[in-house]
Length: 124
Image 1: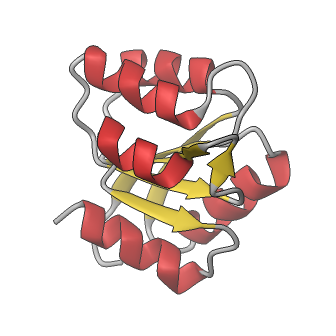
Image 2: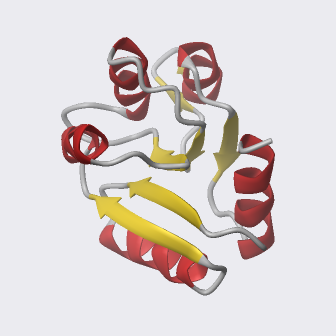
């Protein structure tokens, strides 16, 4: 990536969150991390991000609810979702995330290039 982007990573899994942050830092991105959707909302109230990466399956507030809350606040930041599970019950999470306002939905595991390509695509 040639540009310096401000990226928020929201994932309840410490290892996933830290791994993504490390990959992005090595590719000229400044990152902030949140271990919950609520913490992510609070960070978005304090700072503007170029792109948000969020898990979809999280306790308390899931990724779709997080995206919906961001959009209700008028935050139009491009969002890339990541999920290991495609369905919870009868709900297709990736489709619901796109409907709620996400730009791109990725299925875990993702490699470095898929992640970087998704960020670039979300920003264009």
